Length: 110
Image (cartoon, rainbow, N blue to C red):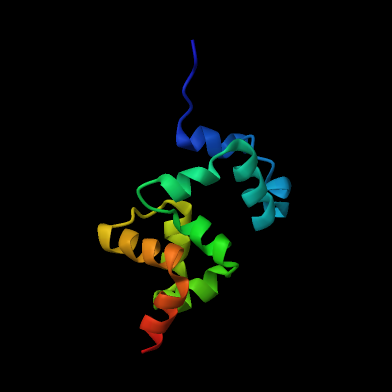
């Protein structure tokens, strides 16, 4: 039988995440791993691309893409981390940014 831990217990235990290894993981590592395990295809064939993958595919920093979208950096970070769900309008903007990044740039520059 598996024993469930409370959030406080997990925090006290320090968890099992290798924080140094996690911090050393680059965007290129993540994209390579996604290709290796086949999850990169979900972005192309799925309902909508996820924020982090769009940003990485465009080779942009979180700050640069937040500036392009006209949103606070913290908002973009919340989307990438899944702390805030994307509403349908944002999903549509991500589709445009994913498929037609230059059109998006032209539109926001106008």
